[in-house]
Structures are given as C-alpha cells and as structure tokens.
Image (cartoon, rainbow, N blue to C red; front, side, top):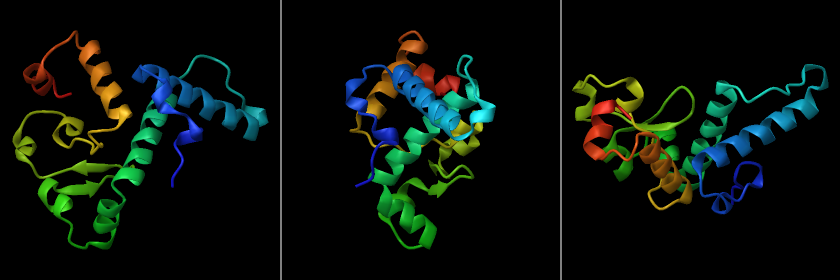
Length: 147
C-alpha cells in the first residue's frame, strides 16, 4: 500500500486549503532539514502550494488508477483509458484528452481535466473549495469559466 504524502491523514481535514498548506509546510520543513544553508522561513510561495497540490494528485492517481497508469505506459488496452482518452502529461499527471472540450476556447487545464477518484475525500473537499471560491456557482458557470 502506498502511504499518503508524509502520512497525512486527509480525513482529519475538512478544508482543501488546509490540507494543501499543511502539505506545503511539511515539504518546506523537510527541505530545510536537508538543505540547511538555504532555509526558507517566509510565507508559502505559489510554487510550494502548487507542488503540494501536485503531490496529492499524483498520490491519488498512483493509488486509485494504478492499472490505468500501467496501461498508458505499456500501451496496452484498458477500457477506461480508451473511453476517457487518458494520457500522462509532462508533470506525470493523468489527464483526459480527445473530448469535445478540445474544440472549445477554454484554457488547456480546463480542456484536459485531471483524473481523480470520485469517492475520495480529497476530491470532495476540492469540489467544495472550488464551489465556495466561485461563490456557490453551478455547473454551467464552472464550465464557462474554464475551471
């Protein structure tokens, strides 16, 4: 079994931002231990927060979509890979490609969404975070905004 990033129990968190910030702080702490001459102590940077998000996404994909990832890498047949047009991007994240969204005017991240397990707590708090940050907008507005 693959452990969550830094063995953080995500079920103890009810807010997406808190999980990401804790993960970024732990990452910074470990890097400060490793590189003592280059310690960081200011507020978290955008890249540290983005790396923490990426860490959780890759962890979830490695635990819940291991067969699909192997099928993509080995170029073998897999039903979900074929149906969703799954590919691994340059950051190692599984994304959906080849849908009708390719013809839209949305940004690249919106055209090629990240594959996440629908039943995981991380996915639920991410959706809640997005819903609240866009002031409780519905699905139609989310699609128009490219989120």
